[in-house]
Image 1 (tube, rainbow, N blue to C red):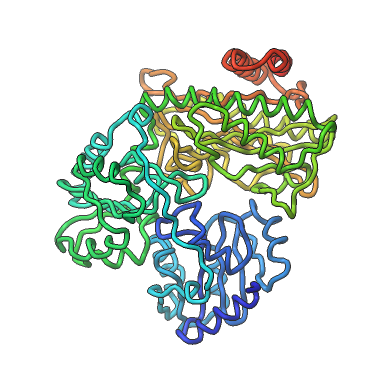
Image 2 (cartoon, rainbow, N blue to C red):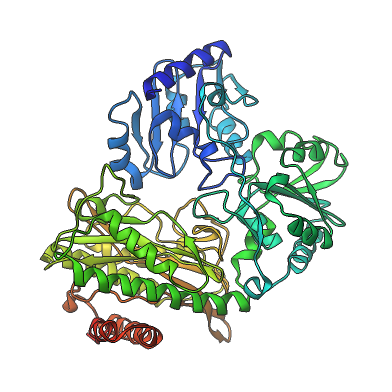
Length: 595
């Protein structure tokens, strides 16, 4: 069915149910950033495949709201349909402003309550409070017309061994219950899939690149109920979970269990992660405590075992990435290499590393103009050959039993232009600014985001994505609550503490020409305790991969920036050299020479 025909079919249903505006977001019943194919309703109705965006359908208009990361991609993918691109200035729900402007009173807003969070519905009601508004959230109109909808994912669960996890599920559950006591809570409803995987030390493959299982958890002081489809569980897994006093119930039974909890009890939920449909099953007389998921804050601070494993994982990933850049430089112009074949080569090299479990994201492999599309993923329709000229932006990552990786390098394939060198050096200066900052305990991500942007702003350029995000531990590549700037996982009240991971990834993107980004993963660690001022923190860079120096205008770097880069490259060489063959060693020695 063509996009316009899908929209026509949806409009007929909207008339049938007296709905004026139907909203289709990008998420699932667990408010996931990346979702299984079964819930890709927004993609199905619009043709836009980006990971963030909202479609709004009325009888006279079909619109997609998305942010600057996806403008170029959206323009191309919407070109053959009636869906109009609305370019968002912020990451907020700007489509609500449009609804306010376009409609008078007595409007009915429809959406699938399973795909809207409690927070989403609050925002909607507040924004439209001056309208005579009604809501229909108990019916999924897309499901009625999506005749070839994919099946629900049913991958098998497996245990993430304590040798990697560092803490047992019993220890983690007890940590959660200790926090529940602080809030006088009787129950804790957990919907987010990465939190559930962390809490129970289990993994699966229900979502591409994210090793999670579609499920819910309800924790009380004497029981934990794990709502998951029985087909996902082997007899061994069932026995392991039951031995830890975990009750297993069908996935959809969570509704019934919420309905029958004591109506005078207190229950903790995360309003940003709990869907509105499920929320309505909680007895209205219950005391609902709305806060960031207890588990989100706990898993953000990596334990000593996780940190040790993560550092080893960065060596594995650094070997793969270094071997890839060496291979690319040696073969460019000698054999046909495309964006896709280059991505496939890097995946092959990662799979050769110990404990590798696949990729952590779809590889962004953008040659020249494609590099300017921030979240570009090559397809067979867009794939182009790499030539011995221009810039190649490669953003990729791997899943390992001992951690999740995410790094970006901008690779020159020929002699760079003065403009490319200038922009690359601005990005590097911003990257180093952030990597070398020292700050007091209590500092939040948005307070230091400007450090990465300052050199780029001074060059009268900017970038539309966040500067950094947390990274999961053999979990989601984007993990909150810490972040640098706005983002899907950001929590503005969260401050950095030792043990948190964060990426450092400023960039510059010149439409139709090239993109530049340098991304490393950093660990927050203690710096010094100072009388009268308390504890100061800093970042330790974990990523091990050379940063190209042929793109640097050395005259633009100060002494501190040169020292950081030289020290970084010495560390890269020392950690990786013993894993390379003789030719690769000589190449890496040259790549990491002091400037």
